[in-house]
Image 1 (tube, rainbow, N blue to C red):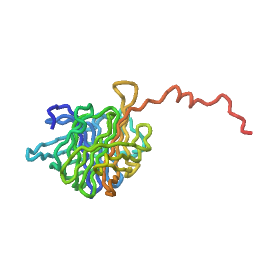
Image 2 (image 1 turned 45 degrees about the vertical axis):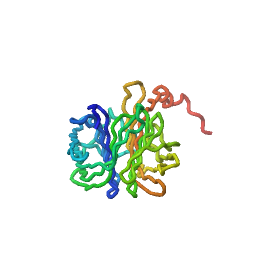
Image 3 (image 1 turned 180 degrees about the horizontal axis):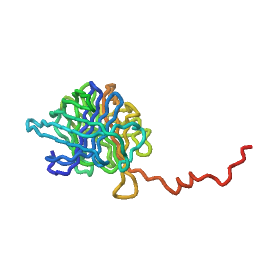
Image 4 (image 1 turned 120 degrees about the vertical axis):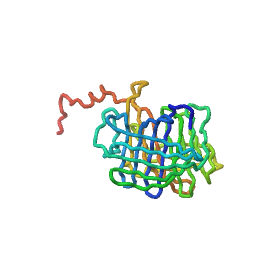
Length: 297
């Protein structure tokens, strides 16, 4: 853990058996403050927790068991079911019903931590962990067991991240920051940085995450991969005001199916970017009817 109490942290948990994907983002160490959480179920249901969007209660605890890096993550919150994930959600104006969600997962390290792009503004400290526990949505409890990528640090204002776990037990963390793509590869609990090139997101528009992502490795290790969205209806996109200017900030994520060297895996792709607001004058002009309709004959 970092010495800074305000450093950003996130954890992406992947359960290959149930297909559940859980992403939790918070700040702080001893008293973590939840920024957001998302639960994706293989059935196609998506649940979003955002304490800043108004009225959502959430209690997050990250409990260090002080035994070989083991810790527990517990979250109890009111989540918003996403009925139309394909449409961007305005964080300031969104409203809707709530569903109780609970996350209780115990983690133990599966690799040593690794600093990606040390010295760069987008440097992240990443590590792989194994987790076992439960995810509850309403009165339904899902028993989960799988792997998780944890990260601490901050990326640039516009970037893309991909986390995946493969059927052979290997795992991959990719960060495509403005300074260039970097990655961490775990095989047999050994973690190391690998060089990447040709990172591409296809089908992205208006801040939304594209349907496919791909990149190539440096040729010395099978770090290159392709990924395709698991379910387009599980693409969650949230927009909010940019405090630094007139643009909107867009954050989008979805579960993806990965393929690396013929081996498939489950993962999550996340994209953050700035989106220019619509030109209200242009929109109004386009919406105005013409003075005279053309003669159809």
